[in-house]
Image (cartoon, rainbow, N blue to C red; front, side, top):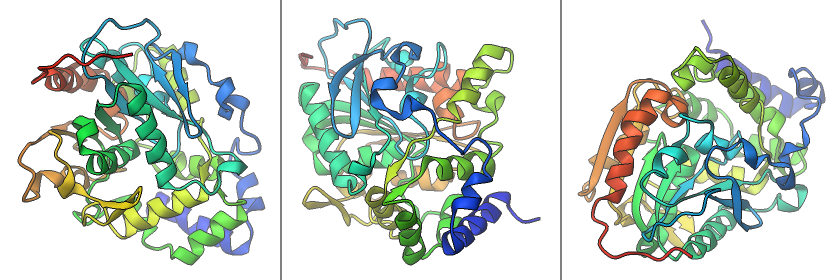
Length: 361
């Protein structure tokens, strides 16, 4: 039986070739997206821990803990995904929050990426690396980076480009070496030529629309978006409703950023080949000197297990730890059992080897 995800992508390719309006209108709930995509409309009160804006940058809001921290050590920066949904995946709900677990041991901040506007359509990966660099400087000039999913490869590129600013690196469900094996995503994307992607971006006014991303991911990966599976809980109706609301919140992406990510990461695998362009230099896995912890899910359909853990097998990966948890992609960030077990261990691992106090402004 054909894979529904691949069938959707074939329909998408046809829509790019023949006009997208009717296709978009057929997507349930795609007629309009709510005002929450505007940065000023983000409801920070819904986040358990990171309820305050520390810095407002062109690509992100740098969020910090609502209650001021008294820690005097290297902070932890959660580099949230910037692909489909908003960044609240890193601080979703009580007992389902990466930030909550980490904040028990560390001062914590998070990148809350803004939905792209028409003025941002030419932003490429360098724009996001540049603002990430500003955020880390604002936190004192050095941080431990915790990259979630697509935030993982961005954190890895940053740690390669600025090794002295990344004390430790945690990569969670992150696409690191796309040549290690196939996944549903890489197999499907390989069917799209750069010309088709360019058409798609052009039709959308230089952007990748949230409506299209939402339909592709939620409809094509039904098992990953099952609330009980993602949250590792099925006894809380309010929590289920919150998850259902979260999975409808998608962000627009700049066309240039999408094109560079698709070509450089997924198609050309430049990160694994030390050929990833990053603010005037080439970055790659072999340049990462930070101790690294990799967390992956055994049944992940978004990022295949071998793609997430391939860094461990590299010749110079002398300080890399790997942990594989039962579950799927979203349970890595939201699952109650994963957070209580693996993430508590990660919080302790991040604390190991702290010698010199680091003043947090």
